Length: 146
Image (cartoon, rainbow, N blue to C red; front, top):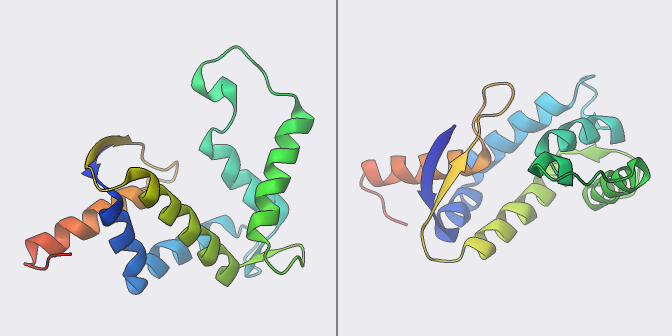
């Protein structure tokens, strides 16, 4: 676990740095594409979503969401990613949706810095928010300002 201080500008800067953003997203896409066919199936994306802790029990609540509702949630998210409705998510679709998600996070954070505790990914990788904070720190250390 790490603790970072960031705001929406930090996240927007990361998304705006096409090279850094695409590298991070491409790495995540490759890790999710378990069979290496260049697209994400519904089950590959669901496997990733299950690590995000989206249900009540993940937050310590005793409520259990029925499995059909959980499946509907995952199906709905998959449909958001599958822009061309061909039943798979390609890299361009994945990049597009991840960009939207991160920009929504940036909007939610606003311009006031907040302190956030971030978990390390199961494979030891950094979260996208950690990468955004690290990119900003590197720019500041190198004398570049946003």
